[in-house]
View 1 (cartoon, rainbow, N blue to C red):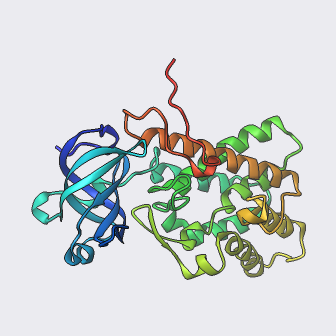
View 2 (cartoon, rainbow, N blue to C red):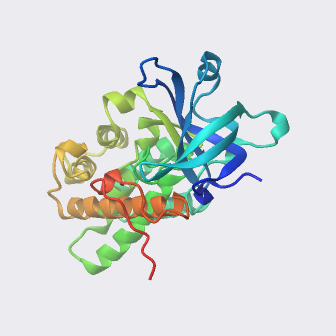
Length: 319
């Protein structure tokens, strides 16, 4: 039986089936450089860095991202982190009886439950123009929303992650609107649904894993794309482009990352935009922590440094 990555411990010898999430052919820095494969092996419980030393040209040509493999390896500690030394590796065959869906991580709640929640929220928006624009934009990506992750690696980076991120944010926005009555609930909830709506077009993903960014993603980005979709919706729906509704929705999308270096051309300057930024940040950062805690081996006390948390690790404190 294949041992889950999360249960790996230092010194483990194992044989099992795993997914190659990332792979890169490199050379050692020795006086006579030798080829090796730098990999990230993954299963539904997590992932782990791995090295396959003395790789041949055939090895380099054989293995690729999203490839299922049978691995014999040894778990070792390197720079205070667990790492796998691959002893043998081969691609799986039909006789192995494994499929890629056995190895992918998914959101804790299924898309079949999440998508109707988003649609119900849209249908309950009381402002007709806001409801029509959000509906138009959501329909563009509804089919991809079932599987799309919310990011390549930072947060909700798994099958159905984007829909899960949106629904968790909608729950937070419900609480904030009940507490802060000066906020426009329609605007804030529209912002929640629209802020990352173009992610499925920005990223090229398979089974919830991002393999690349699309040309639109590289050249325009999801923030600008979503802003453009709002304008497109207004034109097709006959909504005044100079209206405050269009101005507010564009501002929510364009400002939700807060700073230019984080991708936003403007900072939040509407009450709902301020709320959207912090709701987004709270859900994303807490999910980074939760995801890391759930996917590191049980034997690890500290998580690796989390990039989205200023490269700080998190301690699994036991009381």
